[in-house]
Amino acid sequence: MDFGGGDEIRFERLGRAGVVTLTRPKALNAVTHNMVKALGKALDAWEEDPGIGVVVVKAEGRAFSAGGDILHIYEAGRAGRPPVDFFADEYRLNARIARFKKPYVALIDGIVMGGGVGISFHGSHRVLTENAQFAMPEVGIGFFPDVGASHLLPDLGGSFGMYLGLTGNRIRYGDALWSGLATHTIKAEDQAGLLDELATSGDANAELRDFFVPAKRETERQDLEAISRHFSQSSLAGIIDSLE
Image 1 (cartoon, one colour):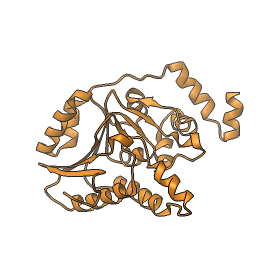
Image 2 (tube, rainbow, N blue to C red; image 1 turned 30 degrees about the vertical axis):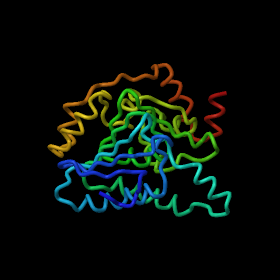
Image 3 (cartoon, rainbow, N blue to C red; image 1 turned 90 degrees about the vertical axis):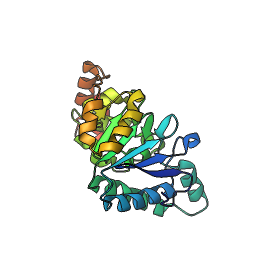
């Protein structure tokens, strides 16, 4: 199936599943404008297709997605062509995923950051394996956590979202499940089996119940208490004062 993404993103129909695969492993599946536009077209088509019961998004290689294509963004800016259209379309896609009427299963096996978060964590089912790592590292270059992270992160308890948004620190699948970022955790070795079952039944809830494997919280209780204490302050200045 071709929705215009070229060799950067692949679309397949496997039984009851519409399957999206990010295919830029050498670039850690950094999200390009073409990928954004193609995924939007696929969702428009599959939402109206009665034969599609579930959409699954996965990736080739060791990363789900390291974020947006920063090199392209940098080069466009240097050339005097700020990529305003890219950001506008990317943010529209994030909202489109959040409103998608069918189960949207993001199968995350590896790092997921920035723009990769935007095409996965707004869906109904965020499924992480033991290889997954989540972060919003934009703060390291002086940028705010975008792609709808300001909607996702405040929902996390214990000021954990504020902590992630301000520090850009990475967390693994156990903390993602505990905090509510992930809806399910599974074994990496079970990904193919899960996809086969989703393609057969189209029932995301039932299949994920069968494949779910609980993951333990990784952050120690005393660290969570410190995060809650420091990052619950009402202002950035207050957080800094508390940390100092």
